[in-house]
Image 1: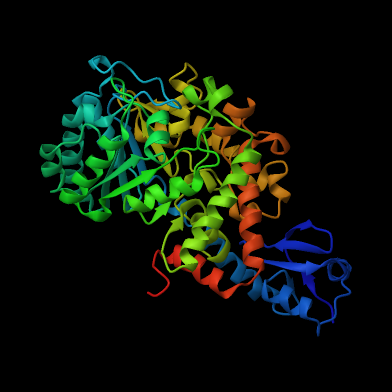
Image 2: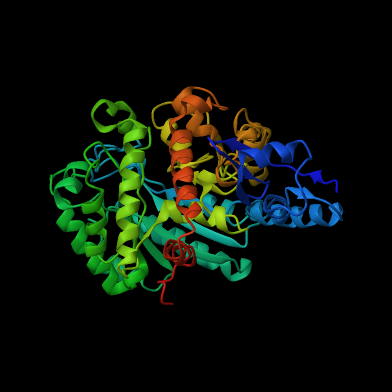
Length: 477
């Protein structure tokens, strides 16, 4: 019986071939069967034939129906494109009271008010935000340290809530802060609004204080922990999330970092590698590390977290959860770093304190050291259409479609990954980038392959853990 071969990608291993279709459904095929498959010699009664058919890589009848099903799944995977920009980051101040070793922007002196956003700029930012067609709007306040300009935060929140009476969008707010300046007066005001707090915890006290000292003190850990507890008291236990950044000092310490998060009442952690921007790029000689070292530590950290879950303790690793969602479900994720086209501007955008608009936070970071390549306009000088539908943004997005980029287009793991022209430009001086020498490609590929190797074991306990992460519920629920 003849069959038609539908689009697929593959990677050869010693005795088998990994195959994936356009929507990320995958299988491992014995090498001998793969040879028969490509030569149209696979027997209809074989297990490999039936598996390939179930994954919609081959079709022996009603091909039009199979293609229609694939197209529905593909539209689901790319659904994020229908909502356009939902994440709007606002830099309300470049001033900062921290002196982080890996600071990614050029922070300004704590007393220099020239780098605070003013009300006129803030008003223009909110007006632009509510021109977005997305039904979901998340406004995220960044810095510097945003709490140094808390009055503008309040102004933006109140103006956004007023506009939303008429726009009726799903609106929420996030303040990305080191929390050290948070006080009860601020929290009492924030309690009446839908505001979440995102902070940074790099690990145990010695490691956190080494990575994230304050401008006037080397000891920030105990102050941050105290403010986490105070914030939870007013805004609720789920009101605070935290991120960690892996420096060279973090390597070998992932178990203690994970335990610190557990002790602080968090039920997940994002084991995040160092981004090559700002001080992290300038001081990479003592902060950075080979990406292979990060992957080695990441796998050890993931094993540690899996063992916690096997003991009945619910705790997730967030990067793995995002990738597992992309591998095991038909849905897109909101993680802009793994989207194709890239999430730059069309999923998330950032407004600097002076009204300049950049395609991503990383694009803004480059501007802070003099390179404004990723600036797409200013809220005071340009219309919404000029900023978000201009030729320049279109040209940048052309370099962010992984399906058309060298090596990405034929990569078996493309459905789970994405393209980031900003990172490519910063790391390699080219919007397209060179995959064999790309650090971000090595990291993403390493984690994806590791997760697939764990899934391949088909261990029922492991599978239950992974699904509990995707569903954000302990196994017993």
